[in-house]
Picture (tube, rainbow, N blue to C red):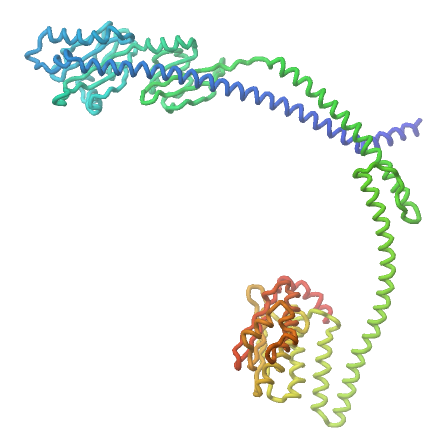
Length: 608
């Protein structure tokens, strides 16, 4: 019983760790995420659509209503323009006060009535003369009261005078004419001028009842509209909306914002009428409705569709991935316990798993080839090690032979011969450098000094050498024997051909993290053509067969040294040559020490 439970646990563990189970869990998780994401997107889309629909509805209402109100006000402005142009009104204003009669005043009132009787919404009209404020000609349907203190102030009439007869809009006669019942009226104000003399004669105040705005709102048949002034004064519509909006900052374009209180949540849209101090507001209350039935069906069907997709995907994965993978791993496990690697003979479909089997078989073939090559290379290495041991005998034999000859020279009294042999032995010890390809700069300088000492034995005092090696450059690692070919070139193709004493000067310094090595001689120099050929990256330019004048073909050795430096630094612009024919030649090598100094430790340890 216990064994059965243990087997069941192992089997369940394998199932939980199987690829098909994990992929099924992944698909179920993805399905859940998709369901939640879809529902969120649906709600976002519904909310966005509701908002956009509300904005479109609000724009239609506000544009229509604001256009109607502005059109009505323009009509009233036109009436005021006709009234101040009426002949009888002008006669009333132009007649001197002492000649003014009741008939003239009555005729002025009748002239105004001709226009007012054909217009609806006009509550009253007042004409004030300049010379006597208390004598007025008016058309009045209701009683009004006047604030005479305001009317006698300059602030009341100066804005009208500045408009030069153009109409302006205000409330309650520009703050001086009020209805007895306290209702607000919209006043069209005008200063009246004589057409001939352009003299200012008086003022017209045409008071319009806000009922015309109520009429326009009633035609829309919507109770969520409110019309106010820019300073917040109520004019018409639903007065409850005034508390929801800061009316002083509404621009002359439609704005939307969401507002709410403890009971309601709504989108409030508003617009200010162009060049008029009137703001129209429209509120759309948010309706908390249930989701549409079609949307509910979609939300219910989505999980079912997702789970069906997961089941089909899991079945497909089991048949085409996990089962073939189990068979493949089983065959590989059997092969790994065998004495030798064998190719797989498992029948797999021609897909990625088949490619894995073919790749494994190719790997078996390649591994066998590598084993054969490894055995062969091991034999080659053993033979090479024997050759190295044999070759190591030759340098030691050379050193011992030179040392023996040196002792014989001392015994014979040939001190110069002994010194030359010591220099030659030192040169070859540093030259061979235990097989190192890269050495410190100070060892390269030692090789140069030994080399020049041997050359002086041959050429005498025709050659002199100078050294200016910066202390911080002595341990810099450079390729072995990059200076010796340059010094040799200075002797054979520079100083010797000049036929007089010459100096070879070797210097080094650091600049911006780069090592600069300079070899300068006072030989015959080089022409621009020779310099160009030496610095060329094409070896044919420095071949003997292509030399067109003496000395060009011999530059092949110098060109090879430059190419070696280029390969070491992995760039072309590492060598500079300056020369003046008959005077000097200067070759400068630039090596990036940051790239090569990591070898310093190994080289020094080998040297020690």
